[in-house]
Length: 168
Image (tube, rainbow, N blue to C red; front, side, top):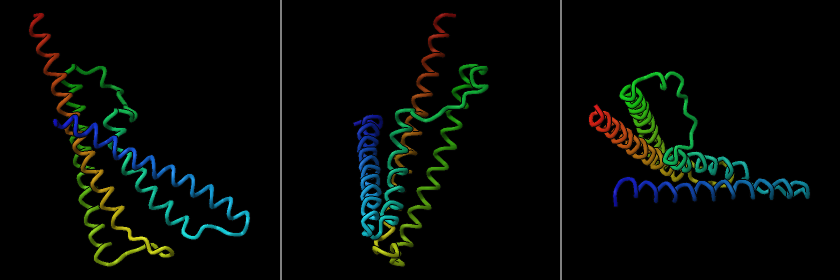
């Protein structure tokens, strides 16, 4: 299994987890609102929704990036030579890898500290560290997605250079 196939499968699985967390957040919030109307709020809703939000954001980023579903700002890029465009695209991916790598490392450090300290949510006593580790893993998967994109950019640019060389 190549990197691209691995990322296609992995980002889909992570996205399903994020979507399930979003659905659970919505159901829990609606149920809590209804129960509040009867004077019986669901205890810990705020904590659960907060932790699930971390899952939603962290677990869906790699899929959006893999599918190129994010917003691109290409102001000025269209004026560059194809090689310059490719260089800028690779440069932004390198910045992304550094950023998500640093976030992933720091999330792993925080998760370790949460686990050692026994850090839990105040009401339901839900441990924080599994969410921090999970989102940290997703950051590292995002790094792989960006590295995979750099390879695609290089291959596209190399292919364009090869075609231009043949037509000259």
